Amino acid sequence: MALEEGQQHPIKIYLWIWLLLFVVSFFSYMVDYMNIHGPMRPTLILTFMFVKAGFIIFIFMHMQWERMALKLAILGPPVAILVLIWLMALEGGYTEGTRIDSFGESTFEPQATPHH
Amino acid sequence: MSEAVMDSVAQAPGLEGVAGDFSRDKQVFGVPWGKAMMWIFLLSDTFIFSCFLVSYMSVRITTTDPWPVPSEVFALSFGGDPIPLILIAIMTMILITSSGTMAMAVNMGYRADRKKAFWLLVATALLGASFVGMQAFEWTKLIVEEGVRPWSNPMGAAQFGSSFFMITGFHGMHVSAGVIYLLWVAFRVRSGVYERRGGNYEIVEIAGLYWHFVDLVWVFIFAFFYLW
Image (cartoon, rainbow over all chains, first blue to last red; front, side, top):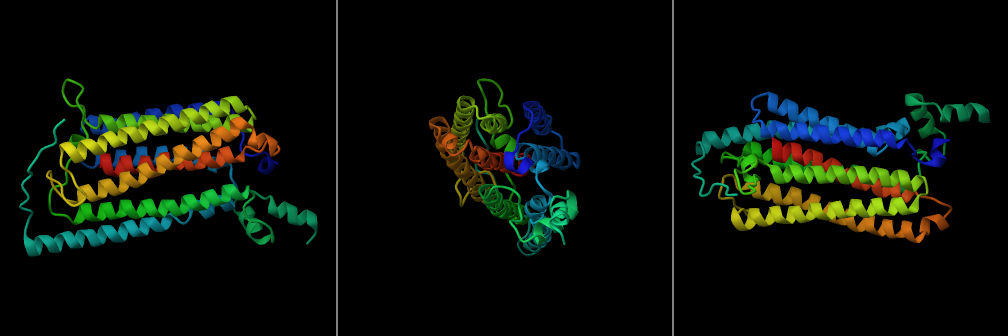
């Protein structure tokens, strides 16, 4: 049974995933390099991010070949983080609104621009 | 219920197997305990990193000061025009390369090919160390040249500095710890410690889980902090 032998898989799978990770990383860098803005930017960033995360978790970390009990125990709890993100985004929008209402728009003047 | 029925329940795939695994009055996870513990540690680490990233989101939304454009802040010029975000792109590629060598090391470990596993682990650790070196360069540039501090930032929102140092610093610490961990495992692989324990190379896979997680966190940092 696989449990006793550990996770042994053909090297070919790793090489393919490795290559795909490079390609997807290149794409996500291109999002910035090609100055993509507007709604396309977050969409592409998140898509490439989840593809990469999926490859790493399911293939490199062997989650795909683990039993459902372990998958659920490890991948289930992070769903709670989505709730935190949602709540903090709501809260953040509210805080920004009250700041602008009470103190007005920022009067910040950059004292420096990045130099290279 | 007879033994045979119990066994068939316990080995069922998918959701049916979950019920079996949790109810059969044995270890729930059919994996070595070290691996289960590593996964649980990584789960807790996921929450820590998520808290950092969520607080970063929070301050970035709430601040009314302009947020510096990471693409420009992290640009680097090699003589000519500055290339946006290039150092971060190179760091990303290095970490992915190291993830690949790590995956191969795990594979070679299970094949009991000690020599290859050792060198692949050393290569992974070296790539990790070079990542930390680049991060040190990046921090130096930001602190010395741009004047960014955890409490102030001449380019815009002060929260940029605190988020940046906290998130990348904590990640860099993980990478540094991983380099030490991997080197330790590598030398034990070479000296035959695991060979004497009945050729048990699970530890390489467990160390690999940690290393892949470090790469995984970077995927999220890259997306949310550098690209967003």
